[in-house]
Length: 135
Image 1 (cartoon, helix red, strand yellow):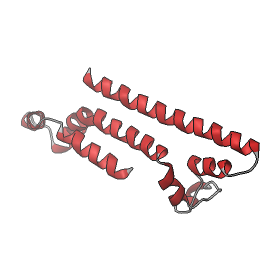
Image 2 (cartoon, helix red, strand yellow; image 1 turned 90 degrees about the vertical axis):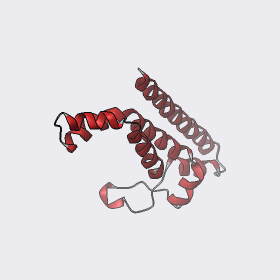
Image 3 (cartoon, rainbow, N blue to C red; image 1 turned 90 degrees about the horizontal axis):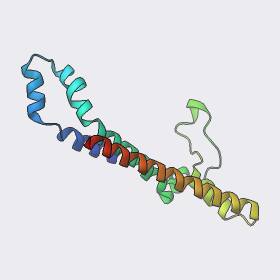
Image 4 (cartoon, rainbow, N blue to C red; image 1 turned 120 degrees about the vertical axis):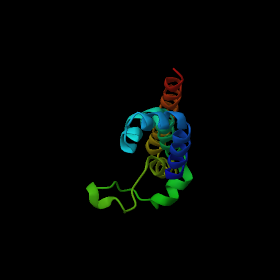
């Protein structure tokens, strides 16, 4: 997720015109003010789109999540559990799908639907951000 965010942020910052930056510096704005008031607002849409798409991609890639979560059925409790294995929706789907009971299989299908719906919403939000930039 982080490499995607870094790459899209870098590309978004490259889209900001050098003339725009030099113009802000030319009228007496400091480098900090130029970055905060000119560069970041101009590059906000590509950065936000990259963040949203990387979150949707991370949620959609099931196999890496299953292997990095180490098949943990437990949820993190507070700040102490940040570096411990935790359960994810993908792990929940896998665990319920291999169960022999019909109720767990139905829960796996329901969780799969929630995951697909989440990815759809995130991708639609990213498209909306992209159209917002073109206006």
